[in-house]
Image (cartoon, rainbow, N blue to C red):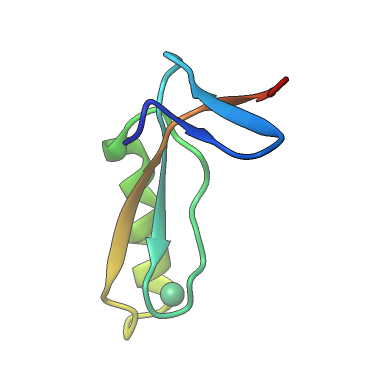
Length: 72
Ligand SMILES: [Zn+2]
């Protein structure tokens, strides 16, 4: 994770806010709902796998909040 990203017209500043977690199926790319923890996010895998038994590869995604600020 970077502390920020700089572009010509704006910079993205990393915030200290909480991470957001989601589970994603690697086969069909469907994603579960946003959750406050990895454990909560990965519960979606149980339901998705029960509906699609041949979908057996998943990812835990975590995302960091950023704020856009114009550069002068
Ligand atoms: Zn799937």
